[in-house]
Image (cartoon, rainbow over all chains, first blue to last red; front, side, top):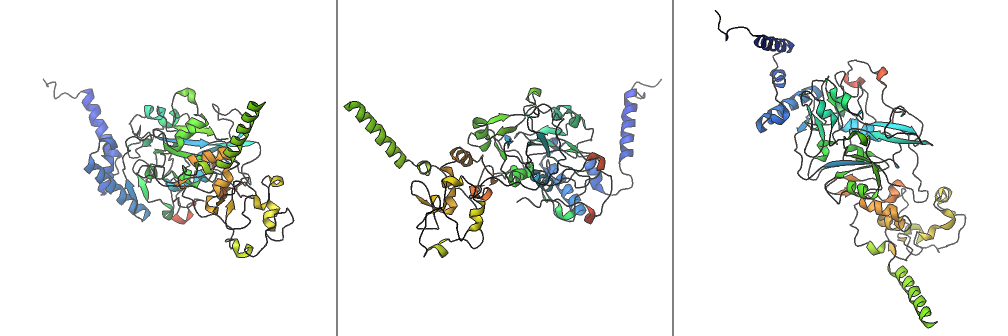
Length: 304
Length: 190
């Protein structure tokens, strides 16, 4: 009689079948070790220093091969005592979309199929808008902005303190960093898009096809958790320009620097002297869809 | 009555002195850090003003100008109550003049604007009104008021928007050559 040990249990059978299927899914016939390395890469937060260095080296080689230029991939950690926050002055925004394209350029968003992390919504004056964005128009294209009788509200990731997208991710490929930025590991994302369904702000974007960017337009200053070039089938979103803002001194995000009316404010929520704290203390401020308890760190305000 | 008169006199004197001693901006001038601003945006070849004005007799009357007709044409800044020499200094044209008579350079013109636009000036100092570039926890580059607002016609001028996003129905799955990939309308952000 066969011992219990030798018996093919249902569990062992499934394990074997899963391993077999996984092997089949790998690109057969490739001799490129990096494909295997990428496949077996651990979760980013479980990597030790050497393993991170290996991953970065592999990615940098991959990007150099693809874009024919040196792409730097940083892994700068969050600074202690920093909680990033953003302010947007709705009384100033004129809806010119400079931020949308500056963001695309800085953060290596796919030009075809087009991906934009920021959507600028146009509302008619007096329209109900805080909890209902359905009436908004994001395809407006007049000769000049602002238009009479309208106002504009750019929306990107609200960097929630209580992010629903993180809760629903089945693989923990997206998480909130200590400085409050919600990031995505594009090598861990399986593209299930649960996070997109969970986000009440429509802030996440999916790479339906392989992202394409002209070689000369690739921004070579990148961060692993931010603007490094993405893959087909992964989700991406605003990271407060993690590659720029994480640093001492750290630069302003690209959208802040490009805004011609100075409607965008950025800083450390924990620093009482910061611009963002001044806004909170002196201006009329609201957070989008506050009733959902997502606790965004993105504040809309009216300076006038 | 003597006491009342004396009180009135004291209050009056106090008012006069406070007006004299604390012009709106000069009082906290020392408290304001030296803002790092780009050079003032002069039209080409117009500065220094003394190049032309040095030998001219200042004429403070409101009139049809023979020079600077473009400025007179666009002039829309409470124009009924204001004329050139309310802000420009008559005797040294390379300076601006505050209401208290203090002369300031064109690089400090925010003091001049702040005389009337106090709340905006307050926000600007805090970094909330107007555009900042540079480092959020380091050196911040401010802009002068006049970098965004023409001082003679300060209302912010409308801009041409960049194109709307591609509608989902228009997105195609296509492999493009490098030269066919659409270019971004905005270049590198420094």
